[in-house]
Image 1: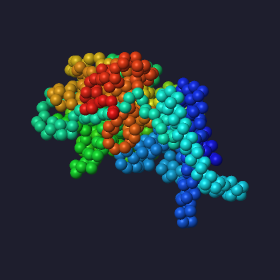
Image 2: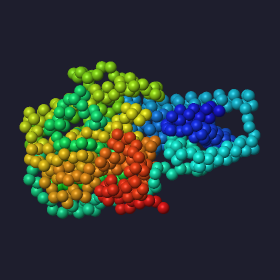
Image 3: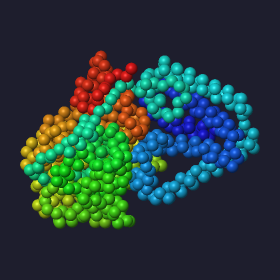
Image 4: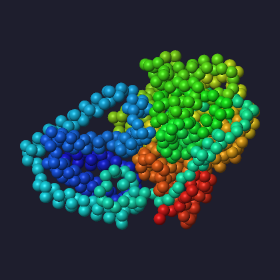
Length: 631
């Protein structure tokens, strides 16, 4: 009864996610919850009873543990959806996407400062308490003779299951399709057998890489030209950086820098909504959907070689330094981009190498000072310096000394507030703004240092964020849960030397465009970068991009085509599995603010594939060998 009450309460709390339901549809949805949950519990009780008779007495504690964990896992799944917009199973699967699991690194990446030991002890304590509660309830059940014959339980279970099937049959014929789809998206437990196809159209697709590994190796093996100019290149990756934070009152220096010193871009996108995939899209100039398969390169004899653009720059004579305040072993971010054991980087510094007991801002000071020392001892030109800054990641950090935050009335997220007020949300946003203001001051200090040492004029400076951050705009916190603008619209600032005379304004730029643009600016023939997923921003740009993620969250939308102010969204199931999807579901169009657009008006009686090819023709031709309605 407690388990049923828990499951029903959690489902009823989620009912508000189903919009535009009428009274009849609400009755069907509620009856579906009662019937599916009742069927599940009847089956669970029968299974438990059968296993109890089969298990030796000394192993029955496993059954007790399993039964007592059902409501606990249900609560964990609810809060996983609430805070991260991801079902618990997806959250767990995503922890091991790179083939290994390191609790310390995962906790640090999530912004959790507690030690792995404390987290494990807390988890075991909760499990022990739940197990004890089960024992108390079992004794109460025996005392009050709350029992049911097996035959009666089977009949009740069958009756509930038949009712669940009938409910879904009624939903299929009498419920509007989008409401039926919302029902299946909102609730995880459905035992009625019948299911709606998600979205507007099921598409059969075949992804293709714009440049294959053999093509990259062929270009790398041939003679390379001598570069006429070898400016220093600075690539700064700011963790969790939203485009709308670049405002004079929050980031005064970079707001002015972007307007007066950088090439002008109207809308700028990260390649994905999560750090490892976004880094991959930037350094490899490939779409994020390829990321998981690229991790398999480590299985080869030579292991990770590093990204093609960086290997090409290395062959052209560039040398690299890499500095980060985070642990770059996370999801193999170092090896995948800079080669096994950072073999492309002569200078390397990340969290495990920085003295302990320093908080994030102090670590940033360490790596920035280390970079300045290297510049002091190095000749100008021929270096690519990569810097990763983490203060803007949750819990949003700034120095406790020698820094005056722009907001005093701010606070961390109150996780006990299931429906945070506008005031509570604003206090969290202010904390984030303090963090990005600290980033702004660091960049001001560093760029002034470049100017004072005579290094600025002949340098290429690239500033961007790996992804954005959601502050309850769509009902959740953080990132890694959707491809909505709050999570994928990030600043991209590129400052070119004056000898790069052609710097056209661009309507739409993404992470995939950064490496082709850099190679173009250095004077390389277009054959070295025209096959990449992105385009040089120094020439003609189609104003299109393909965004993708292995962390689609509750919506399941893992692919988005963007162009001309419109976003076409696609759902693909089980993106955490290895392999590239061969079937996707077109979920409809939104504008860049994620407001739905009328699909019937846009397609005007044409097929969805034909309409999509009209609006995103360059991207579809570039990334798909097959893009058609699935039989």
